[in-house]
Amino acid sequence: MKPTTSQIDAHIALLKERVFQVDTKWPHFKLLFEDVPKLLSGLAPDATVVTMERGVLYGGYSLIGPLFSQFNFIGVDCSPKSADERGAYNSPMVDDERFFGVKTHCRASIEDTTLETDSADLLLIPNLVHHVQDQDAMFVEAARVLKPGGTLYIFEPMVREIHQAPDDFIRYTPYGLSDAMEKNGFNVTANEEVGGPFSAVAYCWAQALEYFPDDKRKEMSEWFYNKHMPELMDWDTEHRDNQCRNHTRFPMAFSVTAELNG
Image 1 (tube, helix red, strand yellow):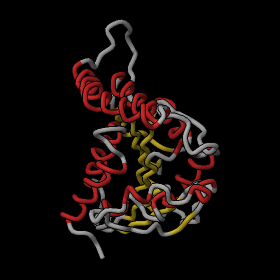
Image 2 (cartoon, helix red, strand yellow):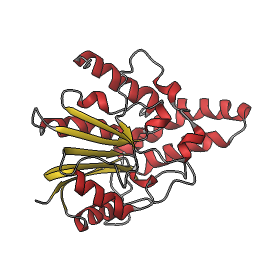
Image 3 (tube, helix red, strand yellow):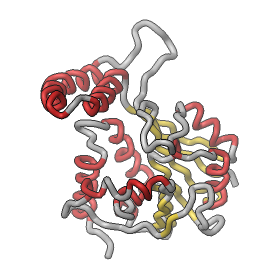
Image 4 (tube, helix red, strand yellow):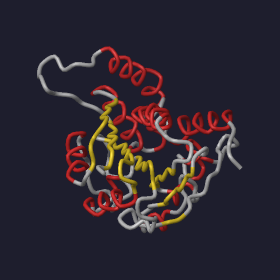
C-alpha cells in the first residue's frame, strides 16, 4: 500500500523529530529534507529509485522509501556485518504510529548490490559513504547500477565522532567527494552545504553530554538545551562568514548531486 500525502508528511515529521533530531542533536540533516523535493521534481513517472541505507539498525526498514513511494522504489540494506551484533537498537526511534514501514528489498554490500546493470534513474546514498571501506568499488558499483544520464545523490557529514566502530573509515570535504565522483565517470551538477562553526559546536556539545555520568548529564543537558543550544543556533544564522580568513568555511554536512556520463 502506498502512503498518502498526509502519511508521508507525518513520516517526515517523525524522521526529523525522533530519528535525525534536527532541532536538538543533528541540525545538519535538514539539508537532506531540503534536497529530496528537488530530486523528486526531476523524476519521470516511471523512474526507478534506489537507496542504499542501513536498515538493520531500524528493524529492516528503509527510512527514505516512503518519500519515493510513487516511483519504482528499491531499498538496499547495506548495513555492515558488525550491525548484526548491535541489532535493531535504533528501532525505538521508529516505534511510532507516524512511521510508514517500507521494508528494504535486499541486504547486500554497497560494493556489490546484485542489482541489474543500468537499472536506476536515481541512486541515493544518504549518510553512509563514511562507513564504506572500499571507496573505489562503491563508485564503480554506483556507475554500474545507474542508467547513463542517471543521477547519484550523496549526503555526508563533515563533523562526526567515530561511531559504529570499527566500520567508520573516512570523512570527505565537498571538494574531495566531488573529485572522487568525477574521477569515476560522474558530472557534478549541484553541491550544497549546511551549518557553520556554531552548529558544529552545538553538535559536539550534544555528543559530549553522553560522556557525563547520569546525574551530571541531566544537569548539563538542561543547561545546554535550555540556554546554550538556542544561543549557538542563533549565532550560526547571524555569523555566516569568517572575519579573519578568506576561503574558509565550516559546514557541518553537505550533499553532492551528479549525473552519470553517457
